[in-house]
Length: 417
Ligand SMILES: Cc1cc2nc3c(=O)[nH]c(=O)nc-3n(C[C@H](O)[C@H](O)[C@H](O)COP(=O)(O)OP(=O)(O)OC[C@H]3O[C@@H](n4cnc5c(N)ncnc54)[C@H](O)[C@@H]3O)c2cc1C
Image (cartoon, rainbow, N blue to C red; front, side, top):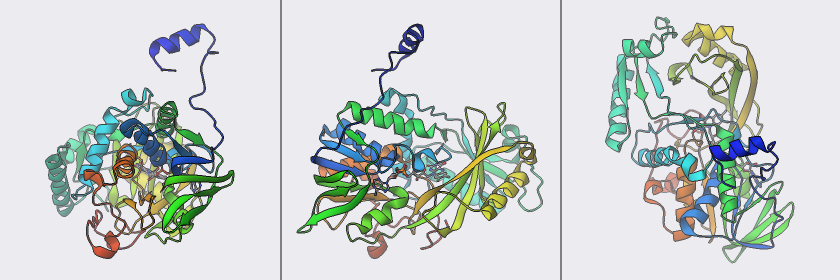
C-alpha cells in the first residue's frame, strides 16, 4: 500500500478502516540466504539495501524484542555530516545525501528537518579548530559557515553569552544538519524491506552462532535453529555479547547514554545546538518537547537507563547555556546502550569466519549513519568488497593501524570521546 495525501484523504472518508499493516509477521523459515541479527536502524537498512540495491530476496532480520525498541528509538535524532577526518567525512557525507532523498525513497514521512546545527566555541583556539573543521567539511562538498558571536546571537538570542566559565565566541553552522523522527526511520526501512520480500522476525533472540570448518552455517534462536549462508551481526550495544557467540572478542565497550525530553512548548528553539564544552546539546521536536542530552554515564553497562549524577550534570549545563530552560518541566528521561569503539569510528567488515560480518562501533552517533551503514554493509555482503566510503572501517585497524580514524583525538579510551 503506497502512502500519499490522496490515500490519507480517502481513508479519512472511509473511517480509516482500510489501512494495512506496514509489514507482515512471518514465522521464521528453516533456511535463508542471509540473516541479519538485530532489527535496529542499521539491521533494517542493511536488509533494505540488500534487496533494493542488489536484488537479493531470501533475507530475514532477527530481532529479540520489537523493531525500533533499541537505540534507533532512543536517540536524540541529530543528523549531520560535520566530520573532520578522511575515512569518516566521506561516509557521513554519503549518508546525508541519502537522508535528503529518504522520504521519497521509502515513501514514508521520516520528518527529516534540515534546520541547521550550530556547534558553539568559547576560545580563540577553539575557533581555529572549528574553522579547520568547517574547511574540511567544505572540501568534502558539504556546507559550513563560521559564525562570530553576533552571528550566533542573531540566531540564538536566548543563550547566555556572558557566562563566566564558557563565554560564547561564536559557532560553526552546518545548515544541512538537523534532525529526523527516529522511530519513523526504523518503521520506514522495515516497511520498505518487507515490501521487497525480507522477513522481519520479532521476538526472536539469537542465542548461538553455528560455525562449521571456519564457515558460518546459521544461528540458534529462541524460535529454533535457522540455517544461512551469510550472517551479519548488527546488534549495536549488544555487539560484544553477540560476537562472543562466535568466539570473538570485539574492541567495543558498552556504555550508557541518557537523554531527556520536556513537556511540549511552543516553537522556541529553531536549530540543533551543541555546547561541547558543557557536554550538552538540545533541539526541539515537532511535538514541541525540548530534546536534550549530554555525555556518557562514565561506566560500562548493559542497562538501558542511567544514573542521577549525569542527570544533574546535564541539567546544570543546560541552565548555564540557556537559563530560560529552567522554566520547562522534564517529562521523561531514558538511556541507551552505546557500542563505543576505541577511536570513535565504526566497524563495517567481514570477520575471520567465512560468511560472518560485523557492523558496530557507532558510539553515540549511529542514527545519522543508518542509511549509509546499511548501504555499505549490503555492498560488502553482496559484492565481497568494501564500499569506497566505508573502506577504512576495518575490524583489524586497532591491530594494524591501517584505516585508523581517531576522530575525537582521545586515544584508545572508549568512554572519553
Ligand atoms: C540517548 C541517545 C542519544 C543518541 N543521539 C544520537 C543522535 O542525536 N544522533 C545520532 O546520529 N546518533 C545518536 N545516538 C546513537 C544511535 O542511536 C545509535 O548509534 C544507533 O541507533 C545504533 O544502531 P541501531 O539503530 O542499529 O541500534 P539498535 O536500535 O539498538 O539495534 C540493535 C538491535 O539488536 C537487537 N539485538 C541485540 N542482541 C540481539 C540478539 N541476541 N538477537 C536478536 N536481536 C538482538 C536489539 O534488541 C536491538 O533492537 C544516540 C543514542 C542514545 C542512546
